[in-house]
Image (tube, rainbow, N blue to C red; front, side, top):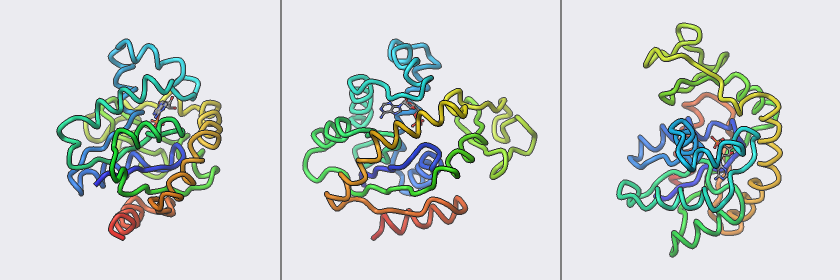
Length: 211
Ligand code: AMP
């Protein structure tokens, strides 16, 4: 099954993609995670992407599209995948559609959350270098500032700072939100209410995928 999770930053796409990917045994492909790995490794791509990410802008299409298509071409993605954070504009959506050919994506799950809740979620978000994510109020670690799983220090993503969140939301509204209509016109989009417990939202997604 080829699935796309579409929605604003902080909607819980990554958290759900990890769970649903594990449940369906398909990889979770997050361009944000891939770019952060490049950044941490100081690769050529990471260095090119760094300034855009810090400001909350989109990394240029030619860099992100090549990276994503290389990843979806891996053997582990042959039976399907969950895309999280790609496509983020029309040019990326069309490049994906050309690359998938045929039937394209099976389902596009649209996460609906209002903006105040997004800012609350993102500003409380903390994570460790191993990718384990917490929230200061909703899902705090047992020991403050330390990951429960690998005891690594918890930090805030630099682009989760409030001024950068505002830019990311504006970019989402201008460039990514129009994709909801694009996929609705293709009859692939299913909207889900993305406010509730992680388990409740997971149930809604599984129902949307089954229907
Ligand atoms: P995310 O973790 O999905 O919120 O992505 C973090 C940052 O990585 C974004 O604010 C962008 O700067 C960059 N990024 C991730 N995915 C894309 C994409 N598909 N196109 C352009 N930039 C991206």
